[in-house]
Every structure is written in structure tokens, then in C-alpha cells.
Image (cartoon, rainbow, N blue to C red; front, top):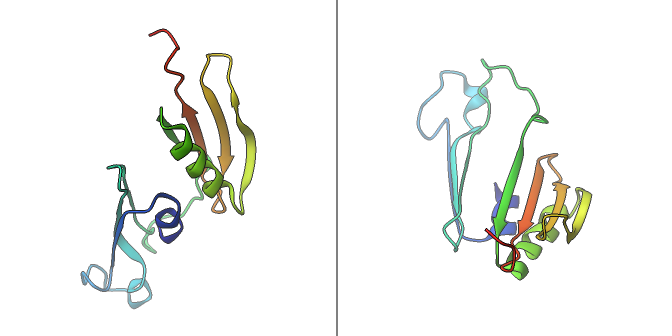
Length: 122
């Protein structure tokens, strides 16, 4: 979440299992039970670590999506997310008229970024 805080800015709050006394397993004390990032533009992201008693499966079956019409803001997010990751599709004009790109960040999370073209018919 610290990485996403660097990308999106805003206010990050983090609480561990230990702080909430939410686990009887001392090895989980420093794992994140609840984290929330509220970006200056109102976007909110929440995340938590996987407790030891649950199976951890790295996620490759989902993607995060950012859409909007603020081109410079979305390009900035895309560029920051791609640092240390992989760009699968650079931000460029898409067949539907918007600017679109795909990347995986340094943690392997896939991101789809779509910058709306105001001239695109509804």
C-alpha cells in the first residue's frame, strides 16, 4: 500500500492484526489486517494480508481498472504503476476512440487505464 500511496497520493491508514489483537498467532502480529488509501481525488483502495490459516494464491485472475478524462493525471498513474513492472500495452489510441493501456505493477497486479475521449459519442 505504501507503493500505491506513492502512485496516487492521499492519506494511508494501516492497522496490523497485532494492533487489533485479532489473531492468537504471534507470527501474524505485523501482518496488515486493514489498510485504506484515500486519494486526493476521492478514489479509495482497501487491502489486507492473508492470515496464515487461509490459502495464499497470488492473484493473476483479476485486473484493476482506472478510467476518466483527466489525461495528465491518468498518464501519471500509468507511468508510476509501470515502474519496476511490465507495460503490456502502451497508452495509445484505441479502436473505440479513447486512449488505453495495460501494465502490471512491480507486484504483478494488472492495471487497465482508459482515458476517455470527450468527442466519443455516448
